[in-house]
Length: 434
Image (cartoon, rainbow, N blue to C red; front, side, top):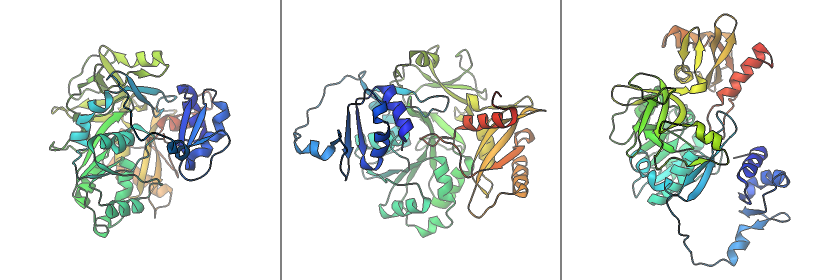
């Protein structure tokens, strides 16, 4: 969950007057309460007392009416807003309207594929749009039972939960699926009843899709979305899967790959993924940031900032964030493509590929790698991984430098902050003014 500094930014940016917080996280709010001039009340939920000036949820409920008075709203009234991941700058509050929930019914029906007797689980925390939508709002709307677990993600523990509660539908992210697959013999050790799995938040490697199907007998349906619109393009039930592809636009959503001028491109032409600006599931604006809002609309399209291409069948393929693409020796290299191959090596748990300054080539591809248990960093292993990548992709794409790390910088929603790694490399090789 968010730490004090992150909460301070969001409370002040939104002008929030009230914060409702569980006792487990209350101290983070208390640390910055005096730095938030608009904050008037703090309501504590859960066991434990309150500090001076705070209210407790249980005390407030004692005198509350048992009658629910429903507020009348219009489809274009503001319902809520979520903050973006901050992948390309400070997080922005994306304002969503009440029409957002019914507009995302196709995602619930064809991607998450809820059924009345399903038990649904999401491995992510509810403080970002993917688990908030699929693990709470959509499930609530469709009357599906949901398993909520307030704990750190540990694959073995999650396998126990999936078995104990007989979870039928699992939503997670590629990193977690890779960690699941790193548990030897899990498909035989646990009595699972999974019938449906989905993934979003970052691109899903083809090898993970194939291995999960082989071991657990279930496809993982990958999707792509963002805080501004949730998941609108995905693999769907009954649709042939092309491992590595994000799928196709869901019913009711119109998408295209466009050039810098906002003109649609044909198959196999890389460009910016765009969603039609009148999409009912699209956010209205960035809170108090009209300039930022205007920047991402062009010629009737909302520009996502993601770089993709389509194939002859209309499937969409992810290349990376526009600012993540690596230009080396005249070639454009997708960080996802490099990471996808690197992550297939048995020693690798997770990796991030970024541009690193080089006096000869301008920049080179560098991989930051987290190793699986049982492997130790060494020059020999680095060379082995480089050769592994060379044998599976074009020679200019292999990481000429490898750095083994314990962790990767990530947003609250689990996306790798490649910008942080790029800036680190610039500072190391070019100095602070790089």
